Amino acid sequence: MATISIEVGKMTSKKKREVYLLVRRGESRSRVKSGVTLAETEYSEKTGRIKSVAKARLVEQLKNELEDNLEALEQGSKISNTDDANDIAERLVQKREIKGVDFFSFTEDWLARAHSKSEKNYKCMLNTLAKFNGSRKLQFQEINVRFLKDFENYLIDRPRAKSMYIGLIRHLFHEAMIEFNTDEETLIKSDPFRRYKAPKQVMKKGVRALTLENFMKIVNYKPQVGKSRDLLAHDCFILSFCLMGMNSVDLYNAKKLERGILKYNRTKTKGRRSDEAYIEVQVHPYIKQLMAKWKGTGGHVFNFHKRFKHPEDFNRALNIGLKTIGDKLHIPGLQFYQARHTFATLSRNMMRFSKGDVDEALNHVGSYDIADVYIAKDFTIINENNYKLIDRVFDLEPTSMDVKAEAVPKKVKAKPKKAKTIPQKAETVSNAHNL
Image (cartoon, rainbow, N blue to C red; front, top):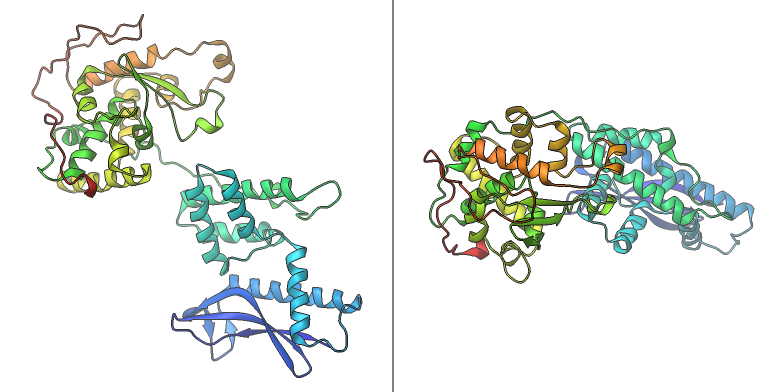
């Protein structure tokens, strides 16, 4: 008769221990990798106990599973008198692989096929889940309500990650059920999300918006010569604000500027909206100089794609530059996304624009589902509001806008009454590869 026990390996040079399930029959021995590794602090040599509760539970589950498989093999007379521990271990592993679907393997395969725009978030979730689980081996049947609550508690200090990661797990769970469950066979038998509700992130309203005073400090900041990241971050922060809170990835990807109107689909949400998150922003004369300064070629509105290989690199450079600017201006934690929050906050609180108009300017899903069906899309209102906001913030003479045609007026008064200027005249940015 064969037996199965837990064995903890020796400490490696990386201060880790492998955990095995030891199969014995007679004098023969065979180790089955559990996929669980223990840090130095997670195991007590004195007591021989695994101190990590989550990892101890996982190893015990694996042991019980193999013991169930062993019993099934013995009852089915699948083990002969001549089979040693190696033969039995091989059959146990095969039976385990057939029995369930591995969450990590499925997710990696699904990402390769789905080409999700959130691939980076999925990979971050997998890495965090592996640390919590102590292994990159996890059967779908092991993801139950208790497991999800433990993972939620593990992320207690990361509210955004807690909401997003568990939401991603839920989506993958349902994708796997669609793929593996058929009328003839059900591999994933239970859905824990029928009883477990993924936590929602509680946003602190307005905390990321800047005051008008701090925003103008950034506008009037003069980047040092040769500090290319400072210059880039400074200019793009103003561009984002004046283009109704445009995201960095959309600045990077923008390809359509027609008669002074920037047209684009918001990258973040275009894949899950019927209107493909389309919006039109009329360029205010105040930022024409900046538009020309960073003008792109080859069908791109801006030249950021030539300086950075990926939009993530572009966004990273912006935040590095803004951190420098924020440190000098005593604005802690300054980030690019605050341009969008500041646009929204000043639009509502200073200009008294309706929340519906602010939502539309931010290219969010409409708050009035039925009305959206009946009302034809017209971006005139939000562009008129944007002109008024820019005139007020930068203390300009009222700037007219032709509301009947898609064109920038031939004669526009946009001369500042006060000496509040934005970026210096276009200059060639050297060391662009260092941005």
